[in-house]
Length: 264
Image (cartoon, rainbow, N blue to C red; front, side):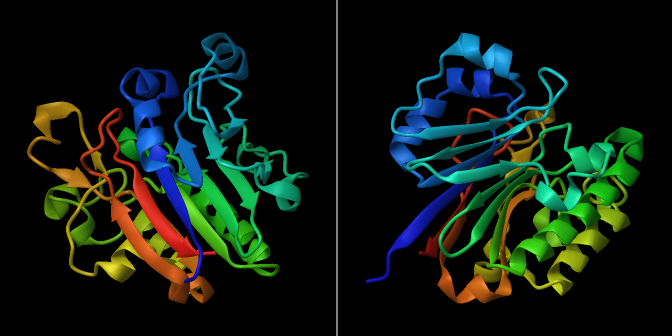
């Protein structure tokens, strides 16, 4: 029987708040081999004061330069090689995208593939960051294709886009809204054309499940949500996919964790 790796991705919307709301119990119950976190909202200085106890896990943090904003982290059951930022491809780029000052990208090199943990920018109300997001997305795709020259890639995180109408409860009312603009959806199309596969949609072509709900109007209770958190993989890895799921019953954030089980 082939060995498999259990991967989970979760936008925790602030690791301190999530810890207070059951994060450690979740970790103990689910026991992922690797867990990618987004929107940790904590600096190294603040984290040192918290003394988190994630027993049995190695921790790799990538906070934003701006305290209490954005940021990513990787928790792993064994020591792994983790690179923060876009790597050598963008080290000489002095733009905010290239330097990854917002702590948005982490790369884990495993034996058979790379795992890239990403917190994609939010286009924001009035689409004030849409241009930055598209620039970021294009830079990231360039980086992923560079990694693929060596081995296949698994990309996880909060993509901050609902790709298809099936990926949100009210598509018609949200056309042009942040996360459902033509530009953001076109980039998801571009990701597909580049050879990457949305694992949840691949296994569940007609299932309507969501991973994020607004805090307003009891949206989660009414399941008026969006599927914006996911795992995408290089086409070469598709035959190795065993499961892809959303843990919609897990609270602690306005996002639900999402999972992928893949043959090692």
